[in-house]
Image (cartoon, rainbow, N blue to C red; front, side):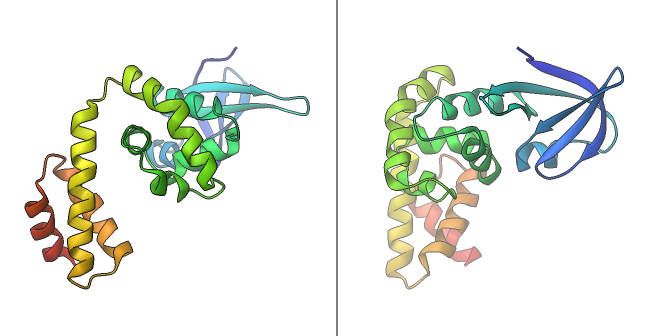
Length: 193
């Protein structure tokens, strides 16, 4: 099992990179989050996962051990293959995925291309306890934030703002102020809408 590759980055695309490791070029499939974190043409360290199927041996590369751990959790769920897991890690950061699973946010998980309602629910059922235990997330603060977020969004909707626009603004506010109260969320959102 190849668990890590250290070498010079010789080719970089949004979906894959080639790392030269002592004269051997390894092709690694990556997420957009990893792509944006990689330097250009420098020595890099990527944590890897080797996916073996009948017709292919595919090496996936990750910028951090956390991203790799989330990927491994995701592919352990029935109906989620490596390409869907990579798409999920490209759509959201590994921290956002952990929060979505821990707070049982089916809509956010389902927003990823290739994931339907049943698969999103299966991801939550299969992974919630593992995510909470592995990453030591505090379930109380997660559900509290989720409740605050939902209350703020419904208030903004009543005020006549579009739900999608409000969700983006509230999500960015929660990134900066994870402990924001409902009132603060609404006030800050109104300034940005």
